[in-house]
Length: 330
Image 1 (cartoon, rainbow, N blue to C red):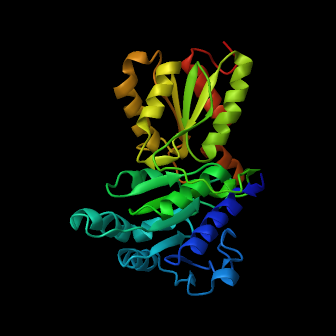
Image 2: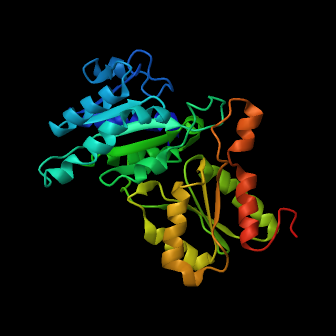
């Protein structure tokens, strides 16, 4: 199997979809000659031309609005918002237009738009370029929300998002773009709403998203030195959520930790905790632990950024708390 980076896997999914279907095109700021701020669309202009790899003005509301119009006319646009922080400028179009048209038309209109965006800390981009806002979009009926953590997952989920007839917000994490793994040459679509168990265990379930999947896997490995078997589950699709997979895992392990990079207050982890508490309360042997960023804007200084966002040691501490241990094993 060829080895692909996360960045290359995104590009591969986009390119394959555009080769297979002339209704698929991409648009966004600096995505053509420059190849996007993160280099995801490099080389695509030469293959597909300027009609299908479209540079846009710096107007997130205009970009998304044009994509919605194209989608309702039968196209399958993939819109890139350079940083997910800038989704705030297009929320009127996303929340009041894209998410509502199919319902308000009684199903007569489809809005098959995929809005790709990236964010996250770990490289000192500052408070306006590092937020994790996925919980904002999960709260809106009519949207689907995806957050892939590996090259294979990002490729299969992006393909499925492009061919979904509903608007999909597709989150990517900046620090994962260089992550590599072996990926089958044949692209296998991954159904939206299907979680993935990255690591099986029997003592504690960790439900993690994005970068925190990898931090949780590192924490799970360290937990073995404390005699603990940790299961790591990645929802992959935040809406619709594979509640059954999460609940079944907790029913097996009897403990749950939820980990994401976004702040814990009103974060996606709060919903996971509520789902688990409601459906698996009788199986829980300890309170559900939540791991996330401290409630502050992301600092620019690397040492402060490191302090604010969660890492493997924070996940490990939460794992140990669920079994009544501290980090020193007491």
